[in-house]
Length: 212
Length: 239
Image 1 (cartoon, each protein chain N blue to C red):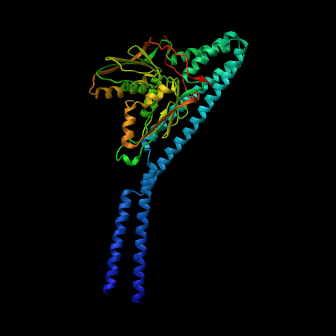
Image 2 (image 1 turned 60 degrees about the vertical axis):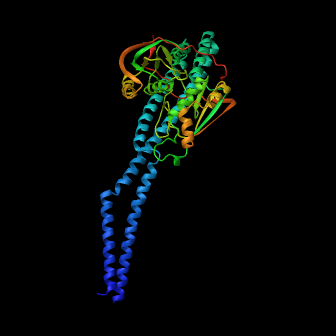
């Protein structure tokens, strides 16, 4: 009888130990799973990525809609339709490539600093491009991606045309960062309902690139 | 009660106590929290995957529409000298905007993440969008006539962004290491610039510290695809 009770006690102990091991294993495994799944990208970065992708997809959708409208115009068979479509695209590409003076809403930065490098200016340009800048001028030089930026002399005036709501968000951050930089004596910006960029780029013909 | 029975009861009590602690800590730590985190994370990942699929489809649509428009314009140009002249001008503008595939001599640059084990804290071993931006800017400064990053053509309005080893270019899905940058232009000049130890200081420092990988070579003929991103502008007008 006593031996039977001892065996029952032993079994109970083993069962409880098993239960403890099981619970501990589940807990540890679930923690490891979370860690593994979150490795590389954190949920905040994913949320930002989702926001960016939504905006990107909206832009692509708008581009597709515009292209469909051009396609319909070309298919209409109306006299001069192709010339209109080509002329409008030529005007738009000249603006994008910085070949003509442009105007529109935007922001104007004034930065007084010593020792700003080309990399600093490239970063500023990229920040403005990320915020949807459509035309940029730095100290009277038209800037588009692909135009080399060399050292700039202070004071630096950066003019960017684009959606002022998005540009203002970036301008706030840039101004805060600049003011925290020891090299910067003064940094400010103004939102303008209409600014003019008169500087232009002279297009260089391709020497090496051949259209495929 | 025998000593063995007493010992058995004591063991049982200790085990029961341990079980109680585990269950209590489990309840306190909310066992469901991790699984909810996983579910939330998975939902975010699924959202990203859906949006990336839509993004890829939209890019294909944009490319296909541009090709169809080009064909319609070619038809129209065949019937009118004026249209032919306009089409030629637009073709040149499109080429400079990255909207036309081009080929020619150039360079290929390969960027890869370094060794994670060398970075106890931080993410210095990861390739960032700033690294890609620096290489692209260097290539343009050395006369590149066109550049593509992982098959995505750089345009006059290109913006680089991203976080934690992700590189986002224009309206595209993010890229992660390895990143391949291809440029058409004077390959000797571009290779010499990439070879200059003073160029790309951040990448070179992390090459030493984190085994970041930067490799490049000149090539007699590389091909760059046409841009499939949007070049729409809605705020600028001719002055």
